[in-house]
Image 1: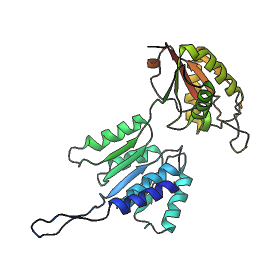
Image 2 (image 1 turned 30 degrees about the vertical axis):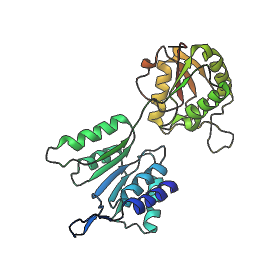
Image 3 (image 1 turned 180 degrees about the vertical axis):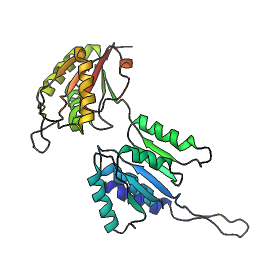
Image 4 (image 1 turned 90 degrees about the vertical axis):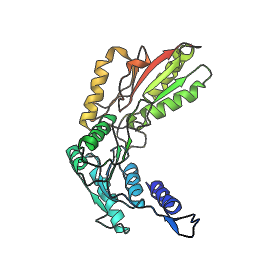
Length: 287
């Protein structure tokens, strides 16, 4: 969050100053940057301070006012950050906090007074926002900056150091309970090294401790809420015949056990599963 604030402040100083243009016939030409108006910034729950302030600070530094809507799961962190911003000198009318259910975000998108949208979240939600912004033929076209989901993959061939592979897989797929946009979702192993790599990965998973993240020995904490838990556990149940490794997790609480699920082909993974579920498939060397 601090890095974002410093970065956009530096960008404003370097890029948003008035620029003197050539005046071949003696006139004075100056290029000045101006804000577009009121931006809506919709942040996710998994980086409730950093991404939230990244969106807000960028819009403010460019001369806009902001209606900031945090995820419905993390409103208190956003409220505290907005309070700090106001205390630091950001005018209250320039930065307004909008706390509410996802329906509030839809209402904001339908307001023709907004001049731009910054959104981080699912691809499906970003598409709904885009459709809303162009649904009214009389509405001007406004910018939509969307950071959305994907399926992050690691491709491992026979030249890779297996110890490093296993360390990186565990860190990326299971730390933060897999609740990061950058988390590993698909592991693609060359068949020549697949068995050995999976054996080592299984051993590394056995060393993980799932539990209370406030305890220093914990490696994997709970997922964010009940709907996320239910969706991920439903995926595990649907793929139970494909599970090649899982570990124990506390029965009480929203703890999804880190799990390896075997796939026949890359194409079998159709969507992003936002939790500690890692899908594995193989490929033949030389192909």
